[in-house]
Image (cartoon, rainbow, N blue to C red):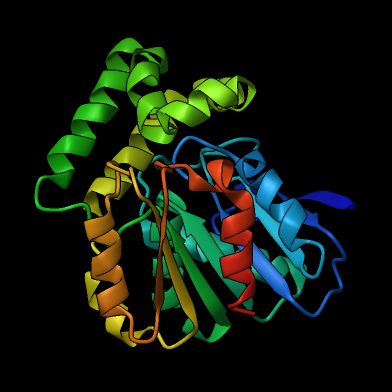
Length: 266
């Protein structure tokens, strides 16, 4: 499978790094948006599966990976506009958009702001709203990172990301995820935390009319099953899949299952 790497300029002048997996001219086109403090490599196992019959775009959200941070006062709407700019850069009118955790919030914002460009929607281990205490909770996480560095959050993150069995069986995946986390710019990380604390996308759920799959790990306590159920109930015609034994980064724990569900949206 071929992978084509590139950089694209956003409307505010910053540049994002991206990769297209598979045949760039394929009629089927999917975009995968990574979770907080990860990068486009997060999707490599799943992109490889989807790219058998589609072109698959993965990219580093602003402030992540090889992408520039720009002014660090972020919003999910701004991240959604970045995705629209990437589609323009690649000459694609529409796409199946799937996001995990933070990426799911971005996908929802994209559904609201660029609905004509949305062919299908995958919402993985995510939520439309973290709840009334979210601004305070996310600010606390941001401040802990700013005060003590990202290393102070590693133990907390790893147990949320992966089930006990997966951590024991796949130490290399865990180690690479931790390494990616620690490569983040702490100021951009804090800005992304605040963005998630402020995000409330509940109002847009009834307006989503494209095929939608909601997926969540059975043991996910970062965005638990209740949050997935709320999105499923809010989006008419959506499906809900609970991934047995998995936690928060299910695209790494169960890529085949998620790829199978996303293929149904084409």
